[in-house]
Structures are given as structure tokens and as C-alpha cells.
Length: 328
Ligand code: TRP
Ligand code: SF4
Image (cartoon, rainbow, N blue to C red):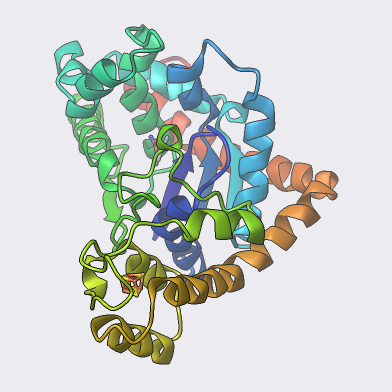
């Protein structure tokens, strides 16, 4: 299978991105799928065009974090969207066949227009966001796209665009499958949706001290008001983190039993969680540091990825131009 996915460079990755997205990307890569992973820097501009002061740094940070989390440039093509201009070419051609009303009716579009009040996103670019995403996907003829649930509407549109193009001109595109992640979404440390603006996220690039300061005050099962009150792990966000960070089974059994009989306290339980998270994250911390001091390596990864991506993209664009009867 050919798989592809992208992420916007909006700042550091958090543990939700790691468990919800990157771990599944790495798995797809290691299952011998032909994999393309990219930094969607143009997409970041659709909402963030007013302040691009961190864009360059965030883009490079994201590449380093991809690598640190296990995306392997020997196995996957890692590239930057804006380096493969063919995405813009296909975006333009696709824009001809997408009805305006179809874009305006996408639920996430309306939602975001209402939600993002600080920035003016009633722009052409933001309306076109899902068309650009469709171009990202169709230009590689991807079979599968690993994304979160919030992207399902965009994938649906992508398939519609593929169908319409194929029936108007000739069959150039495959209809890509949505590969939804099986792990449940990790909530923020306060039990609400993970969001930078709530201050409830743990970045993957953190350290032991910061980890402790985020985990220790975490909300637990509300039934455990006192140390002697028994609890139900399934009602506790700390438990969800234990699962996500693969606390060993025998420890999980111990916690489950200890929590429901009030044998262990939440403080002990959280200490164990910190250990599990440290175990998972510290190799990532080391790699992030490594790539910070080996910028040439990171640059070469991207140059090579850009080149490979461009070859695949050009191949599709030739078919597209032929199908539309553009003179080549
Ligand atoms: N819209 C995606 C997100 O916000 C990012 C993205 C851009 C993407 N282009 C893509 C994801 C193509 C998958 C495929 O997460
Ligand atoms: Fe949650 Fe652990 Fe406390 Fe049980 S012991 S309520 S699982 S933090």
C-alpha cells in the first residue's frame, strides 16, 4: 500500500500527536508500506498567515520530531509541502471542479470560522484548505491516509474530487481510504480536549521535571476524594495515560487492584506513570538533541525526500495534464 500523511507545523508535538498519529505512521512504515510523510507548511498559512515568525523554526522542529519519533528516512519519504510545487499546480486544477457550496458546507469549516475569532480566516485560502489537502493526497495516488477523526470530512471530499475528475476527464486518481487510528484520543491533563490554549498538553520535547509538574496535579477518578476511597481506573484519565504509555501488564494489574481496593494512592499511581512516560520519551529526547546538533543530516533528509516526492508528483501531473488536454 502507498500511504501518506501530513502535519501542520504549529509548534512542538505533544504526547497526543505521538500516541494518536506518529506511532501509527511508524507502524505503517515498518509494515513495509510505501510511506510519504510531510510538513504541511502551506496549510499552516491558511490559518496562521498573520504571524509567520516561527514558521521556519517550527517546520524544522517538526522534521526533527518526525525523525526522533521513529520515521526512518531509509524507509519513508520525508518532505516539506512547499518544496514540491506540484501540489500547488494540482490544487489550482482541482479548484476548477470543486463547487463553492460544497466547501462551505464542510462541518469543520463552519466550526472553525466560528471558533477562531482572534484571526480573520474568512479568506479564499482557508476555504480552499481541503482542496489543497486533496491535492496533497491525490498527487501521490495514496491508497491510505492515516489521520484523526477530525480529518474524515476532508478525506470524503478528496474521494469525491477524485471521482469527479475521473468521470470528467479520464481515470487518473485512486480513491484513498481513511485509516483511522485505533487508539482512543488522549485527553489533556485536566480531562478536557488536548489544546495548547488550555495549558493541558505535555509536549514530547519535555523533561522529567516538567513531566512531574504536569502529571502530579492530574485529575483522577472523582470518587477518590480521600486516600481511603476506592476508585475505578476506567473512570480515570491517569489510567488512560498508563495504557497509552504501555505501563507493563503486571504493574497495570497491581494498579487496577490497588485502586479499586484503595490499597494504593493516586500519588503512587502517578509515580509509576511518570516512569512509564520517561521510558517511552527519553529516547526521543535524546534523538531530538542529536538532530539539533546534526542539522546537516536533517537538511539532507529533506532534500532527498523532496526529490523523491517530486518524482512521484510529476508522474501524476503528466497524467493530469494529458487528461485535461493541456499542451505539454
Ligand atoms: N489537515 C491535516 C491536519 O490538520 C494536515 C494535512 C494536510 C494532511 N495535508 C494532508 C493530512 C494530507 C493527511 C493528508 O491534521
Ligand atoms: Fe486514577 Fe491511579 Fe488514582 Fe486509580 S489510583 S484513581 S487509576 S490515579
